[in-house]
Length: 324
Image 1 (cartoon, rainbow, N blue to C red):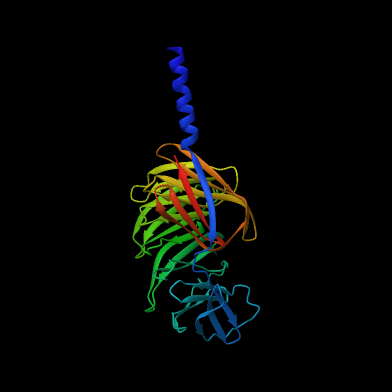
Image 2: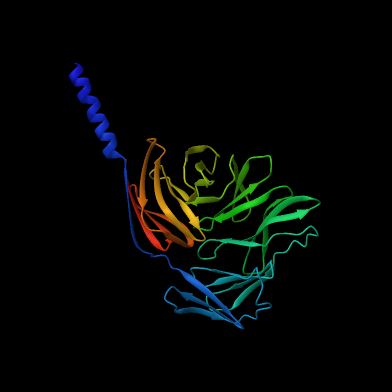
């Protein structure tokens, strides 16, 4: 009997070791990396090889404008931010289809306005991360349409925005906010401003993701990630990390969190480690990637099979295969 018990424990231990593994390989980035080049009276959208995709006219008001930034869209259009809160929306023909000011005109001041959008620009959100009014710091966000419509989807006179993320489908928007002395929060709304849910997170949020159809929300800080059901706000699982987290998302099909950690300098991440956390089986698989990677666009997790993924948006596509 003792011999049988020892044999059984050996089999159990061996199976556990073999069943938890993670392999990380890389390939040239398949992301459609686009770059916008701004020159005097001209603006061009180019692919990674320098081929011009779209060209339009642009009269630069101030070459030294510290807020000047371009946001390329995968449909060939792009957005230009200038003068702290002014935005120009270009279509795929290089024509300006919308010019808008996102300034609140607050006497207390405001931070530089930001943009969040899905890859094809179906839903474009302009937001003020921080607006000071009456000695308090608040924030606001709105969805803009090409037909000059504007729809306010969020306002707070006491919470600042950490980040805003639009789902890949453009149907849902996650707005992460913080207020000193309280937990951070994520408000999920649809593209028409209808509130779906609010979840709390007890660490400062650095990123959020809405996976697939938007049914699950992944929230992460520098050291932890958690997944929530969007409709009822229930936490499905969470995990902690020893290295800074730069990406985390959840595959509902596999009930697994995929996270990338490492040391960031500028936009270069070294000591890269990939984590696959199966919250259903409560098992963790980890794998190191020896080379550094650069974040070149918004990272996207693509599921290509059971526990098999491609993490895009970096200078290399990271192919991830986990076994549990």
